Image 1 (tube, rainbow, N blue to C red):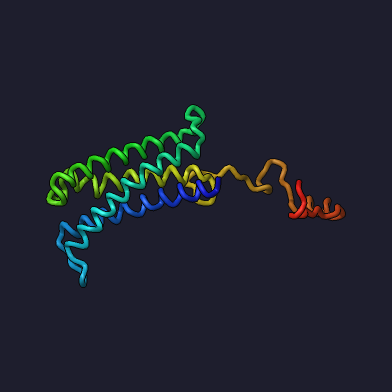
Image 2 (spheres, rainbow, N blue to C red):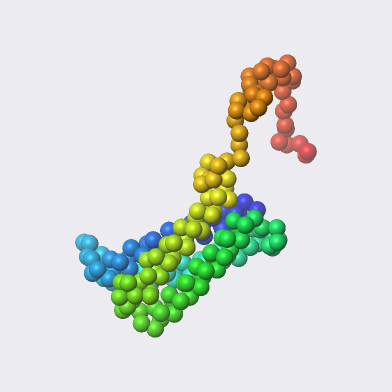
Length: 181
């Protein structure tokens, strides 16, 4: 299971990285910025490559997210449902972008429909996907309050040293990794 989780994580993080790369490359292409040997051809390639890779990665990311959640849609937490909706929306936006690209290439203006989708659409959707992903983790990285409450802040404070002192005479438990449990 951890391999599937790791693969899904790598795919979704790739989409999150490619989205701003496509936007920045598109802006630099439209502004005709040249840095050393990086010119219009490079910016054009980076924009188109990023968009194609995002499209190719988004669909398997959606599928791996569904299979991870064991197809139990009715029992999904609302955050998972939001992420699924946003993922499908990103896929639709990517299809529109690639259709426009296949028709006219990168000839449209910076703030054309294509430019707005590349610069704002992909990045806003990716940001919302990341924010909801962080909500799911509910840990150190969460944007929400954690469910953990320190022992000393409970109604009846617990001192871990007192609990450890009560158990100090108990024999340690050893697990032999070579024996079947």
